[in-house]
Structures are given as structure tokens and as C-alpha cells.
Amino acid sequence: MDLSIVIPLFNEDESLPELCAWIEKVMHANNYSYEIILVDDGSTDESWNVVEQLRSVNANIKGIKFQRNYGKSAALNEGFKAAQGDVIITMDADMQDSPDEIPELRKMIIEDGFDIVSGWKKKRYDNTLTKNIPSKLFNAAARQSSGIKLHDFNCGLKAYKKKVVKSIEVYGEMHRYIPVLAKWAGFRKIGEKVVEHRARKYGVTKFGWERFVNGFLDLFSITFVGKFGKRPMHFFGLWGTLAFLFGLTVFVYLTISKFFLDKTGMTQRPLFFFAILAMIIGVQLFLAGFIGELIARNSSERNSYLIEEKVGL
Ligand code: UDP
Ligand code: MG
Image (cartoon, rainbow, N blue to C red; front, side, top):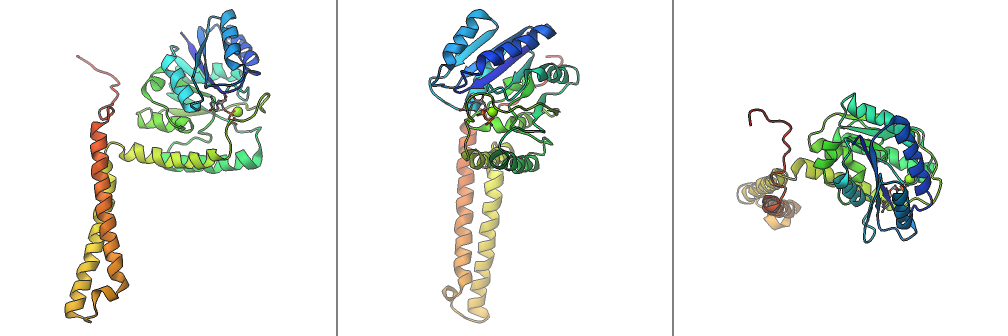
């Protein structure tokens, strides 16, 4: 199969027929063998009926329905598990992404050898104040911390090599950082293509202002998990030891000072409490590191490495 098109959707019944018809047109024009995987993320409108109806006239259309709304990441993850195509395309259901971009995206994966190609909505048709400006900040932070030079991490339109989607797990709200997840999994060829962006035709956006708070918090976690997820002690142990040693040094100084230098009582000096605090924090960080190590050791993913090739075995 050439292509799997994975579409997460939450209350998008109005756009689905039009979107699928457009995708089918592009598929036929290029003679692709394909599947469209519609993942209904617990819609409360007619979306699932529409999916079943679309399926009844085109067997290339497949559907998955969640019991309730779990979020875009879960929907993508489930779609990735089901996908069979050599190249997987993800796009939003709201017709903001154009299916006409698919052939070029596929070409970049198959011919140019990219692991991931991410869309870049260079010219956006969203509200400037609530979306475009925060999104610039957000992308700059993501570029800084991940070292991946993308302009638009969160673009819904992306293309993947099959191997990539089968080796990452998208959870929580990590759909914003799939290129980062892929990079940590060892996929380095991450490309970008300017894509056409359109105004939302039907329905309303499903993400409010919380997206920015959550987006930044997730950026911290993903950076931390990527770096220290499998060796927490290297983070907590380092800072714990430094804090403890710092406190201890101050303490020793205060002791010497009390008996041999100016002879003021230790507890009369603010520095004393500072030293105690540093030592307590140091010990706590160290213990957090130990607990982290215990958890990492018990995790089923403690040995999840990917073998790219083997010879003679
Ligand atoms: N979506 C989803 N589950 C959710 C929220 C959104 O599957 O909980 C889907 C939604 O139906 C759409 C895509 O994710 O296909 C992007 O959402 P939206 O267009 O609301 O985001 P925006 O374009 O405003 O960033
Ligand atoms: Mg949208």
C-alpha cells in the first residue's frame, strides 16, 4: 500500500464528506493504493455516522471510534498503530490542510529519503493574536530545546516513513512534538515543506488558550524525558550533590568561624539557615534521583532500542 492517511477528528461531521472526496480525487489522479483512517475521538455530533456512511461507499475508508474524547495525540497514536501504508500522512479533519500537498510530501519521503516531512503554514489563516503570535514563541522555544530546525512543529499535515510511526508512542498532548519524539527515537532526517493553509470552513477550533500553558509544560517534560528519562540519577544526583556540598562547605566555614575567627554564634547568622536549606534540598534531590532510577528500572521500556540493520544474524 502506498499511503495511509490518518485523520483525527472531534466533532467534524460537516467537513468529512468534502475532505474524503477531495482526498479520493488526489489518490485517483496519482494512482495510489491507499487507505484513509478516520479516528473519531469521541465526537458527540454525527461524525461517526458520517464515517460509517463514507465507508459503505468506499472500502478504502476505515474508521476507529473512541468511547470518549481522549485528545488528538491518542487519536493519532491509534491511527499509527493501524496504518499499513509505506508512507503515512496525517492531516486535520477541518479542511485547513490541503490534500493537494500529499503527492509532493510522499515524494520527499520516498525519493528524497526523509524520515519525516512536516508542513509549514507559512501564511496562516488563523486569528493573529490568539494563535499566530503565541505559536511563533512556542516554535522558537521548541527549536531551541530540541535542536530541530522546524518553523511549525504543530502543523497537522505531516508525512512519515512507516518505520517512524511504528516506533514512537504519541501520548498526553505530545502531538505537538512528534518530530522531537522521532528524533529521540533516532530518526534524524526531518524535513519541512511550505504548505497551503486555509481558513476553517466548518465548525470551531477544539483547542483554547490552555494549549499554550500545556504546550510549554509538555516541552519541559519532553526535553527532560528525552535527556534523562532513562538515567534520572544523572540529573538529580548531580544537582543534589552540588547543593549538598555547597551547604556543607558553608557549614564548615561557619563552624571554623565560630571557634577560631569572629566567634559569633552560628545560629545568629543568616548564612546558617541557607546552608541547612541547601543540604536538605541536596539530600531530597538525591533521593528523588534514587526513586527515579527504581521507576526507570521497572519500566517496560527500560530496554526499548531500535535495531536498524543486522548482518550475519
Ligand atoms: N481533534 C481531535 N481531538 C481533540 C481535539 C481536536 O481529534 O480532542 C482534531 C480536530 O478534529 C482536528 C484536529 O484535531 O481534526 C485539529 O484540531 P483544530 O482544528 O481544532 O486545531 P487548530 O487548527 O485550531 O489548531
Ligand atoms: Mg484546525
